[in-house]
Image (cartoon, one colour):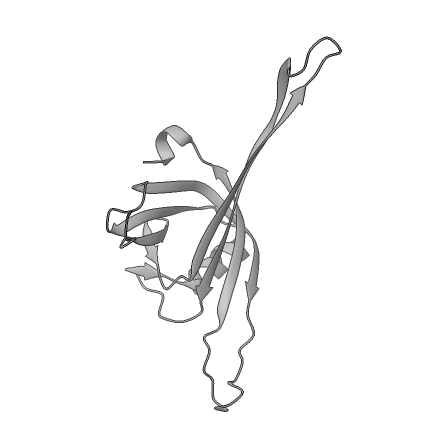
Length: 146
C-alpha cells in the first residue's frame, strides 16, 4: 500500500499556481440506452461530454513570472480569456498519472470569501480565499493523460 508521499502541482498556462488549497474536476459522459419492443439496449445516444473544474486559491502572495496566484485567475475570468490547466506530479511516485492537461478552459464563476477577524484574538487570523469554477472545452484521453 502506498504511503502517499507525492506532491501535486497545478499549472496555469505552464506556470505553477501557488498557493492552492484544492482542485477538483467533474467529468460527465451522458449516454442514454435505446430500447426496442423486441430487445433491450439495442443502441445508445451519446450526448456531448462535459468537464468542469473548481479550484480554491488563497488570496495571498505576489503574482510574478515564476508562479501565478488568485490575481491571475481573476484577470482571466474578467477578460473571459481561455487558458490551460495542468495537474502534474511535483515529487513522489504514488500518483497513477504523470500529468493531466485540461486545454482551453474558461472560468464561469469566481467567488471570493469574506475577510474575517478571529473571534477570540480580535485580529485577522484567516486567509481569504477565492473559489473559481470553470469549464474545460478540450480534453483528449489519448494525449492529455500521461
